[in-house]
Image 1 (cartoon, rainbow, N blue to C red):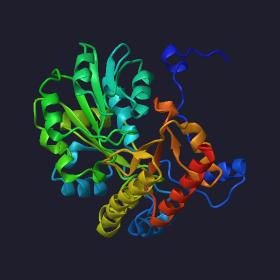
Image 2 (spheres, one colour):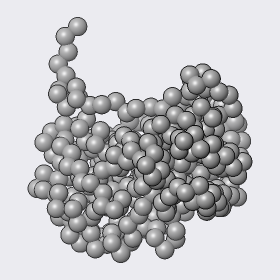
Image 3 (tube, rainbow, N blue to C red):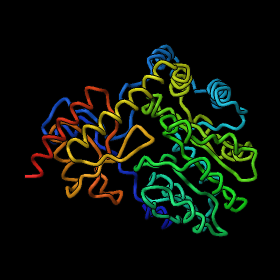
Image 4 (cartoon, one colour):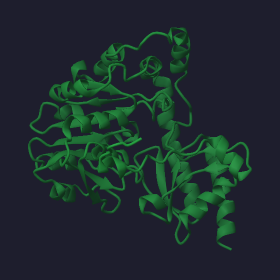
Length: 367
């Protein structure tokens, strides 16, 4: 079979998925592992979402609502926006792909930071676009350098706020000053997957900018605070003109039925949502204190995860040693931080187990 494949597709590196827990346990000969690596909600899904999804399982032979009508109405009411300013996707990842499909043609450019979410560069390259990547400064977005990277071919700017993997944010004041310098016609994408965990005084309110002179898109997800990562549902908040373009390129049934039903129920589960925020705040504080007591340096964060500086220890070796004790964390070598690990906040019991494992690994590695 002879295929004609563009070079920009040939050179794409597939997104590296993590191995299932069962496979890791088989490889390392352990059982009862806990996963504190993927920034998931350790409380699990909203009970109301589970109940709602269970009720519609007999309708799986039907196509989902192609407009996500009821979910769109509920989110619009919650945010105080027009439903026509919302686009739902198979995770907020899909909104990124739709933005690239709608606005990037071969030779066009997108600007993002490094390290940050890998999908920004992937969706740009998949359209034949050129990525201009700006290093973080002091583990924060260098907004001045981002502006300097903008050219006449720039169509999109991707900013994850909070940043993954560092957990840092820029303030609303910094963002507003940045917007005044962005050339007209460039779309600024504020990826706010962890918005729910951000301190209220540091949260962006993207809806404030929808009627402004600069095109701004905000991305949110039900994967984190709402505990629905397995259902894959997220959305973009944007000016109607941009939303109309995305609807032209998206698939007709891109958000499945269970995702819509589950997200709608989770949106109304304030008890689960507040418990998640409380667990996260308390867990960050408790884990940070415990890690500092072991002479490690956890970094401040505005998310449900945080980086930990290991000093002179190797993050990949630390990860392997933790795996052998049934605790899955994330080494940061691939992000350019070889002496860091990333930890997702767990339940109280998971956090205690992690600290015990860290203590044992440190004793072993420091010998």
